[in-house]
Length: 281
Image 1 (cartoon, rainbow, N blue to C red):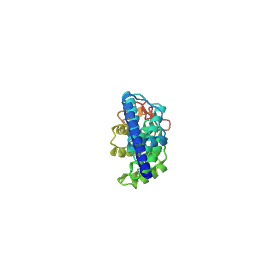
Image 2: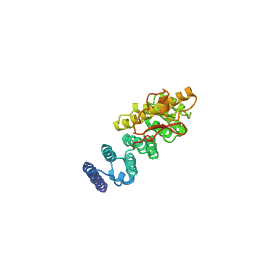
Image 3: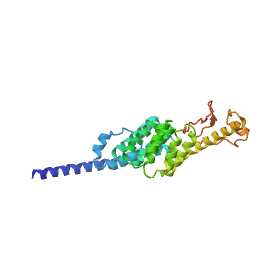
Image 4: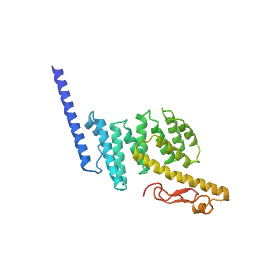
């Protein structure tokens, strides 16, 4: 009899907890419809207790909240502040703490934090968590490899992540070859183009596709100018001082436009750079 009472009590408490959690879910969804703004992000330990068995639903709401805020800023063409980017990262981190296998916040956070905010450390932290749980997904170590190659300029670490990616199903034949290419310091822009073209093959999210395609367009322009500078040097036995020299000598007909709104130029070291830094101002 006593055990029956205890069982009923436990079931009752669970039911009350479930109703409480569902009410929080409903209230949070309604709040998202009415308002938009950053606030305090609930600690993971607390969120797990509150969510009970509805952790997946809570993760989806947290992700949706950050996406709603981010989308609103894009629509209004407003630049996010450092504080706002930190808030987005904390939401992506919390969502993936609640649902360790939830790909969207891993991917959205990693791409936008590295490309949009230059917060590569935070992006890699999300990807490292994904690497642990999504151990079948080759795109996770592939993106870690790209970040270490492109943003951190650590070819050795990048190559190790590509080796990990090549061991996972569906990675194809390109990745081992690309990993070998990273052993060389040259061809940096060309390798970055290959990375992005490969990522575009597996990206369905339209926002992320836009980010990749815009960066790819800029990198292809840089690669075009780098090759033009090489051709100029080969023909005239000296490097051009400015990009206009390439037009004057008939190497190219025009200087391509930077999709980020900057101007391409040749720096003191002879490298092709842009005044935008490949970020929207």
